[in-house]
Length: 489
Image 1 (cartoon, helix red, strand yellow):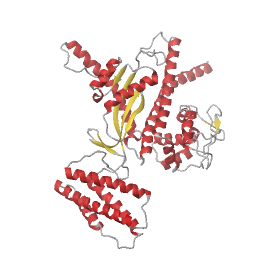
Image 2 (tube, rainbow, N blue to C red):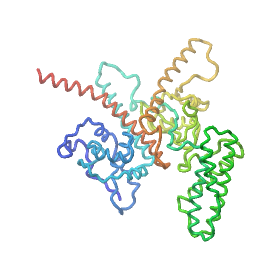
Image 3 (spheres, rainbow, N blue to C red):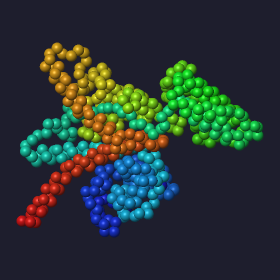
Image 4 (spheres, one colour):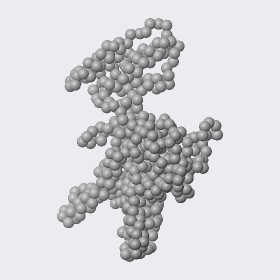
């Protein structure tokens, strides 16, 4: 059951909260509370609850606010709850009417909060926040232009003042990978873990059988695997020998589990049945790669606990292959949004048209420029941009011009576009060093997607806060200085 919490207040309603403790209106959590459209988010949050039965659910401001606090401060679930209990400003951000240390909030609730905010809902919230920030920036530019500060006219018109037929703005595109927190996968370890899961299923089924437990050579298999792990530099022949032996053990266990299920009064649990399907797929993939002497296959499983994770070949110096979600990100005026998120490897060049059409539908016009990596500059994308009057960075196809002046001008424009395109690389660095994009630690597929979108939402909120500080701090400084001069005069 979900009901609107009428106790949620705004800062201007009651500036002295928590037993007369004054709150500073310039605090970051107070400002963040005014940047998120809570009423619009609540409409999407209500869809998780049907009927009027059950205990009263937590408010949308508390649910989404806890996830934002966790992502902003990079805390665990337990540390997030402890920080909320100790921090009055965070309690104000979460919508509490008064400061209380003994709040009814358990760390396990954050798991349910992540499930109640799917990735598409968080992406929609991010879009609302970005649209509101861009609208406010355009209004400030119009006010400055009408005020006539120095008579300077901006180089580019604002978003609202541009006709629909005129291209405006810069769209920056790039792709990256958000690594998942899994153990580095090896074929021998996957087969070893599969065999252990099958042995646990056999122990469960044996409790409902009268016959003697069949032999599965688990001690011998475990001993062989441990001997192999102690070998720091195994040869190819030794690796294939261990793989063959482990495949034989897993094949035997799969056959025994199928036979024991027929004459056992005990059934496997839902989780064990799901693990059995995953182990069967792992065995088929490993047997196929062993027979063909290859190291890759379609939809390769690299983790039994997170079977949705796929290897993403990025070709980076630190790691040529990463294991996680691949995502294409668009950057506009410093605000980053996820265009595509997939757990399978894909060619990101197909996202250029998708991101451009989304830009057209959202703002009513195409971007004037698109800055993207070399993989995006295909012939099809070049023709698409040329037909719509969009400048796509990079040199034109074919041989360089013979005129040295024209050639130098092309190189200069390419260097300028590359420097401007570095902004999205910096955004990836911020997300991976400061936030959770560097290592996603959630276990479920849907919660991992939510965590990735939350990282971009928090990054955009922090950019808005930085812009507010840069804009308002000089005004407040000179206003206070003027008050001091008037008082001392």
